[in-house]
Length: 328
Length: 272
Ligand SMILES: Nc1ncnc2c1ncn2[C@@H]1O[C@H](COP(=O)(O)OP(=O)(O)OP(=O)(O)O)[C@@H](O)[C@H]1O
Ligand SMILES: [Mg+2]
Image (cartoon, rainbow over all chains, first blue to last red):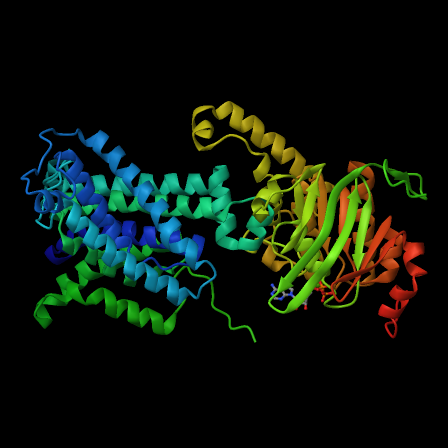
C-alpha cells in the first residue's frame, strides 16, 4: 500500500476521534435548541465551568477563595482534602443541575414567548456571566484534570498496524475512551427520550408547547431537565477536553467549533450533530494533511468555517435538518 | 325536566348526575376588550354541554378559562365540589380535564400512535429511577397504558394510520387524532373547541357519532363549542348561548331555540 494512503488512514482515524469531541459539544446545543428553541451560546462555557468545578472539588479548593481572602484578609486556598473522582463528578453534576435550575428560574422563565434573538442574547449574557463566576470561584490559572482516564499511545493498535502496514499508527487511548463514552452517552440519551416518561414529555415540549400543556406537562420542569441534561453533556465534554488539553479558558472557544458542526448537521438533529462533528473532525485533519503544506499550514483554524459556509449556500437546513419551506 | 339539585333524565333516557364543573360570575378582559362578562353556568356529570354563539362571542375564551389557559380577572371556578385555586394549564390537565383546540395542537413530528400515547403521560407513575430499577413494574404499566391507547385508536377507527406521521394527515383526520389524544387521558371532563369546524358533511357525521359514542360508552362529561346549529341541536343536552361576552341563553336546545334574544343574536345568519 502506498505510504501516503497509510498516513491518510491514520489521519482519518485521529480526525474521527477529534470529531467525537466536537459532536459532544454540538449535542448539548441541539438538545436545548430542540426543546426550547433557544440557541445556547453558553454551551461551551458550561463545559468549561463543569471542568473547572470538577477540578476544584477534586483538589479540595475553596470556592471564591480570592474573594474571601480579599474581603476578610485571610489566606485560605484549600480545604486540605482530596475528593475521589467519582464523588467529585457526582457533586459537579449536582452543581450543573443547580445551575440549570437557576438559569430557568432567574433568566429563561422571564423570557417565555420572546423572540429567538432575545433568548440568544440572554445566553450570550449567560456565557460571560458564567465565565466570570468560574473565574471568581476557581481562579483563572490553567489546571490539569486527571480523573483516571487512560492516556498515551495505544500499543495494541501501534503493534497491529505495524505488523500489517509496516507503520504503527499513533492513536491516543484517551481518544478511544472518549469515543466509547460519547457512544454510550448518545445511546443513553436516545433511550431516555424514547422510553422514559420524562423523555417523551421532553419530545412533546420540543414539538408543541400548547399541546404539551394540554396533556399535563409542566414546561418549567421540562426546561430545567433539558438544561440539566445539557449540563451533563457539558460535563462529559469538559472532562474529555480538560483531560486532553488542560482546563483553561480557551476551552470555551470549542463552542465556536460546534457552530460549523451544527450548520453541517442541522440544529435540530442529534444524528446530525454526531455526523457533523465527525465530518468536521476528519475534514479538517485530512485537509491539513493533504492541502495544508501547500498553503502554509494552520488550515485547521478556518477549514471548518469555510466548509460550513459552503454548506449554508447549498443546503441551509443542514444534512439532517428539516427542510425549510416558506409558507405563504 | 331540569332538577336543580340532583340531575335529570334526558329525552333519550340517559341519567345526568350532579354538577361537575361550575363557573361563577366569570369575567375575563384583554386590555379594553371584555371577552367574558359575568357569566355563570354549570356542567353536569355525564352530559353533553354545548357553548354556542357568533364569531368573537367569547366561546373559546370560556373553554380556555376552564382549562386554565386563561386566567379570569373575576369569578370562581368550582370543580367536583371544590373551589379551584389559580392553576396552570398542566395542573388542570392533571386534574382530569382534557381538551382539543380550535386550531388543532398536535405533535406534528410524531406518529399518530405517539401522539395518542402522550395522552397517557399523566397516568405514568414510575419515575425515571423506578423505570431503571424496577423494569418489571414499568413494563406492566407501559402495557396497561398501551392497551388504553389501542382501545381509543380502535374506537375512533384510526388503526390504519396509527404509524403515520401526523403532519401528513388531512385536516379531518387530524381533528380525530386530537380527540384520540384527549380520550387517552380518560378525562373526567372533555373540552372540545369546534370539533367539526372545516369538515365535510360525512366527516361531521362521523365526528358527531364519535362524540355521542364516547359519552354513551364511557359516560364522559363533554363540553363542546360548535357553530353548526343543526349539529348542536342533535348532540347536546343543554346549551349556553354567548354573544359579545355575555350569556344570553341557557337551557335545552328547544328552550334556547325559542329564546328571542338568541334568535336576534343569530338574526341574518342562516342556520339549520
Ligand atoms: N389571547 C387573546 N388576546 C387578546 N384578545 C383575545 C385573546 N383571545 C381572545 N381575545 C378576544 O376575545 C374575544 C373573544 O374571542 P374568542 O376567541 O373567545 O371568541 P370565539 O367565540 O371563540 O370566536 P370564534 O367563533 O371566532 O372562535 C375576541 O374579541 C378576541 O379578539
Ligand atoms: Mg373560538
